[in-house]
Length: 171
View (tube, helix red, strand yellow):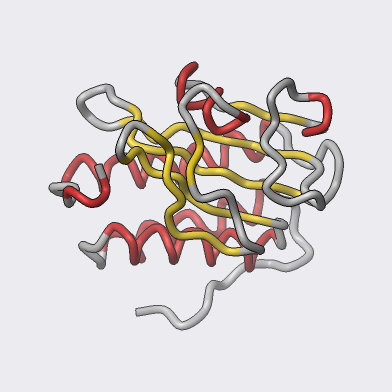
């Protein structure tokens, strides 16, 4: 098991995504526990990019419920029709919000959050299993580079979740 992630601190975001993708794949492929995998993915993203908040919300009890994350305290439950996470869940699309104060219905879990990107995690049965939520304390901090890089990571998570029985507590 790796004790650290290797990446070029001064490289572009695209390069850093390229550098960490095989490392994340190795972490996920070597572990069968969903919580452990999501926790490590959040930790890698927080360390490599210094994002304000990185975490997962998983579908449970007809809501998005907080899963593994890195950063300050977070909202515990989000309805499917609320906030950026709910929008990504219902539209099944990646959502980039340059300024969260301009997003109708944004849920302010942390006032320091200025921009956000949320990607749905879709199971092999076509159902949304959760979302990857990344917040920045800078305006307009996310681009198609992040959508592509994080999208590749979400694809790994989707393959992992599709290949394993998801425990009842994660449904």
